[in-house]
Structure formats: structure tokens, C-alpha cells
Image 1 (cartoon, rainbow, N blue to C red):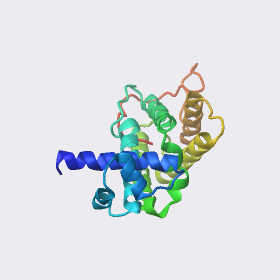
Image 2 (image 1 turned 90 degrees about the horizontal axis):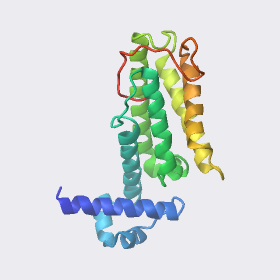
Image 3 (image 1 turned 45 degrees about the horizontal axis):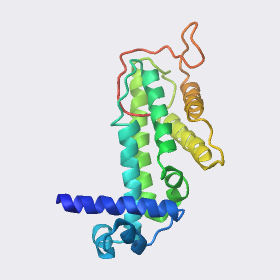
Image 4 (image 1 turned 180 degrees about the horizontal axis):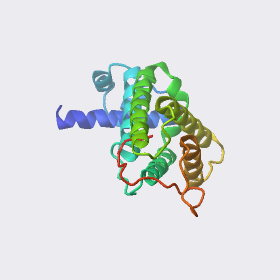
Length: 215
């Protein structure tokens, strides 16, 4: 794809995101084209329909989230637990800072045009999260009697609901406090062992479990 075409597509996606925010989840192709300073014909050429354009906006959001908190995250902690705690902080920070987050995890997540995108992203999270928990079990980080697939589904659902509540409230809770609360929930669900003399959020874990994929 030519560089000009890539630039045109990105301009339309950015303009559509701004229109979705402005319209509380609703857009018109003409308005997107005007905001991008491009013809409406180009919008239809690249995305086929309004539904295709909205799906592309949501796909871009999840691609950026993946870079910030999952496969592209630059986590520096040595222990498994501290890396996953870092990941949660990055995950919450991304949603707090991205203006599209309240829509994409709220009203738009139920829209038919983004259902396939949502299902694909959630399926990747579930599969990679279960794999990560199995590695942690193998390394003795979490108990063997935990069901990785059930546990990751419960955690992903719980974290998502916590974010929806935080992002849609009139007064958002402190970002760091929310991240800490989510981590405490995860640590409890995983029955992480506590080191003697450590605080409530310090877990004693083996340092050799260095997988990079998310919970």
C-alpha cells in the first residue's frame, strides 16, 4: 500500500474517532470526510461502509492498547508478580489517558459493527492469559489447582467492569489507587504467596518466569 494511501486511511480513522467521541458513539461519513479534509468517496473506498470505518477505529484502539500494555509493553521488573503489576498500571493508564476508551469499552462494545473486533481481541486475551497462567503454575508461582481458563475469564471480566465503572463515573477514582485495587483483586484470585514481612502487595515469586504476555 502506498504511503499516501496509508496516510489517507489513518487520517480517516483519526477523524472518525473524533467524530465518535463528539457524537457519543454516532458518526456520519460526510462529517468524517469533512473533518479529515478528504472526499467522502475516499472514506467509502477505504472502509466500504460506516460500519467498516467504526470497526477500523476500534481495531486501532486495541492495537495501541496491545503496544502499551501487552505484547509491546516495556516491563522492567524481575519478578513475575511485579511485571504483571506493571502491566496492570500500564493498562489502566492507557484507558485513563485515551479519550476514546469510555466509548470503546462501554456503548460501542455492544454495537454490531464492532462485535467481531471485540470477540477477536477478547479471545486473544483469554488464550494468552491462560497460557501465561499455565507457565506461572509450571514455575511454582501460583497453585496448580487453579483452572487457568476459568480464572483468566473471571479476571478479565472483573477488570473490564471496574474500568467501565471508573471511566463513566462523574468523578474518576485516582488512577494509581484503581490499579492497586485491581492488582489486589488479581493477587487474591491467584492465591499469590506473601513474603515474610512484606506489605499487602508484595508477593514472593520465582524470578525465572519471564513470559511477556498478559493476564
